[in-house]
Amino acid sequence: MAIIVNLDVMMAKRKMSLNELSDKVDLTLSNLSILKTGKAKAIRFSTLEAICKVLECQPGDILEFRPDK
Image: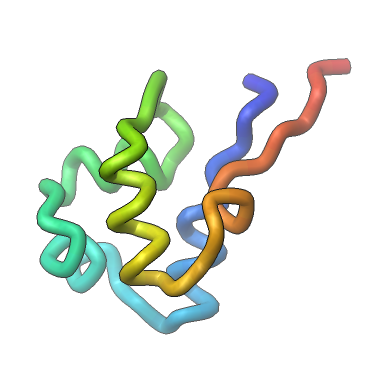
């Protein structure tokens, strides 16, 4: 897939666990895990906004476009 999810990188930079992020964003661990592993097919803007607020980052810090070769 051409969209890469760097959620784990931002969480590591902020020294935040998946459990902590789950609590602060009010998402289930399973949904966050799906997003973190890049298996998600979509993300709601409200979810992306909440993650960015908690991690104090921009959407581009979490999502990256890499063209398929």
